[in-house]
Length: 114
Length: 110
Image (cartoon, rainbow over the protein chains, first blue to last red):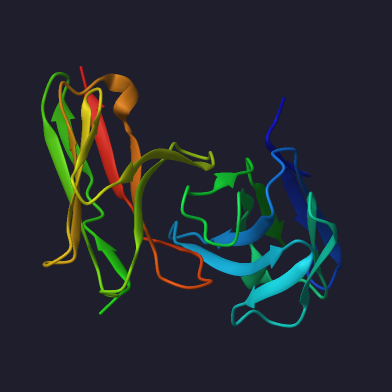
């Protein structure tokens, strides 16, 4: 029973397209996140949501729009994809906003823009 | 100074060796500390939390030095399956998020 699940696992698309990545957690956690891991393997926070409310929005182009229909789901929509968007996108969740017990990550979505 | 700094490695060690990684963090008010492990093409997984008093989990020992702002991870009796990237992770106070170091790669050979 997967705790944090993301779909799709792989996504190959052309520049200029719009795509979405979905994330669901069944841990009953209040807080969810999107992280981006680039080719240099650096994990960087993009967004965090707590009980459907946006808490953190790092310096991310506004082509990226997260949506949280309920606290168990956090989706990421990307408009007008660019080559530089190619990366692995990880969804994660934590018990609460404090995150003192660490995060549980999904298995990642490997996005390749061609 | 980067928020969380680690030696990227790789550290190449034979099976059975003891290996230690260090990590430094810049925000002196940071409250929670973790070591995560990431296998190639997989997600990061929590290895252990790091407590002020130091803590041990089997072959793994984590230490925190708040005065010097560094965290360490010691792995004893290395196994082939320990080969992975070890990520030092810090949580700043307030409604912050986990900040990850770039990771230290460990390669354990037979």
